Length: 182
Image (cartoon, rainbow, N blue to C red):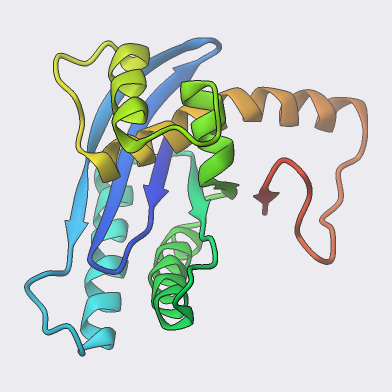
């Protein structure tokens, strides 16, 4: 199964693509989509770049599913709203390409990758490098996206087992302890 991980951000959105075959994971690609060339106040242009960039990644690497980070509430509500719009652009691009999308918090991803939910970015980078046997340390945003893809590879095994044993139905509020899935 090919999995695309997305770490949304208004200035820099990280993406990571892995192939998962049971407990084995193979690195395919990773990188960032940057909107720094656009004026800070031009939100529609930034959203367009993010949407088109993610659509291009999906077209190039042909993932079968995606994992996206759920945003947290910042001290600054304006920052949270802007990040939410970047996340919305990512979700819109993925759903428009017919990809099933699962969502996880940063704490869930850090706990799955580094062993504790308060891991620093550098710890996540080093663990992603080790788990995927990469020759170098990936960038921070790309490492988070790869971490989301790795976490989803592990979580999807559990989701598949649950779906075989019971009928899964979408919850109205779309939230459950392990994240969100659509």
